[in-house]
Length: 466
Image (cartoon, rainbow, N blue to C red; front, side, top):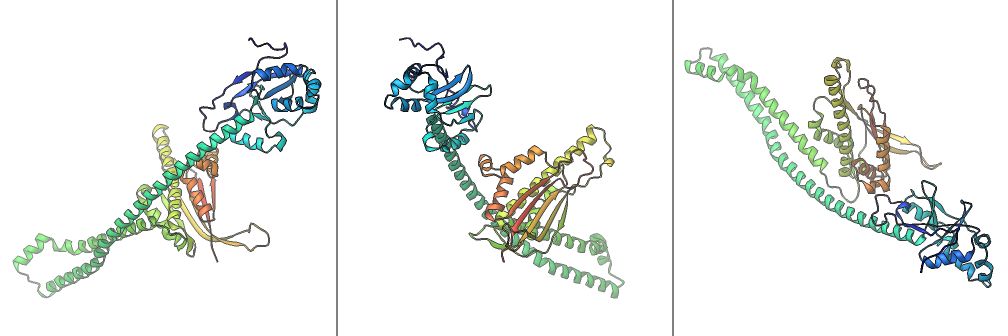
């Protein structure tokens, strides 16, 4: 049978949205929305007939000469029609009569609002309104109705997807953590195996140096008391170039000792970096950890990037040193990348823009500052707390406001769940694992590439107990 409508009533239109293919942040516009507007002067019978023909229609938007007046839900209308004499009082009367009794607070939300946020606002309504439809306002000011059950269903789907993603991420992180732990044990074992022969070489070099010096002194003594040497010995001295050996042997031994010392420090740095944390924090030498990370990054630093250490007198700091090493590695790697990118920009300016390299008075550097300081207590009346401050700053180009804001946003739990970054992980290690503070300061100085001071600075505060 063909559907007929009152001249003032247009048939409802369903906009199905994209509920089957939610994006990263699904909004109300992705849900099924009904567009159904009724003039408030229409008879209740006409609206009841539409509700009968469209069982899924949650309600009707009431207008007066096209201007929004309010909204009446299917449930609300049915409640009043079931009252004694309700059919005679409201069904044959204009909707404005019914609406004068059934008027309630209406939740109007933009279609660009996320489903999760909208669900929270819908659930904060009073109990008698919690099942009422939501009026969704489009960008072109169109008003549509959203069934509250569709909103809750979508919200549960999103939460289920989010829980699944979090579960899979936790599994991946667990596997990755186990891999890193195994790799750490492997590297620690390799470093230990390197240290054994290095210790053997280092220990014997002292004796070799002493023995060689004694032999040189013996040869000089022979020459002193035997000025006339046999021809065979004279010939051998010329063949082996004894004078050169006497000068070069101490330098060669010193070079071997220097190389052995560097290899020893590198192996110790690997051991410190791959240290496996215990269940509880243990006191650690922050300066030794920083020096180990700098040593591991030496190949990337090269001879151009200068490391400036302004170390204060620090006590042993209770911490998870392996995780703290990861934080130092992340920050220093970030600083090195910024300086290398700056070097590329300078090279481009010289080679392609015709600028004179002598015009740039710029020495790329990373400054590391440590000190013990006091911070104001969070609550009045409490004594000042003592903290270890570690500041790592480069004189690179700094961050744009957008890049800086993205990094700060990644520190939040929601953003960190979306995309795990090295700096977000560092923030979590400092604040959650150590109860510390993690600050970021940056100044974009791209317009003055030859007069750079502090570009980006990361500031870490670790609490001192006792």
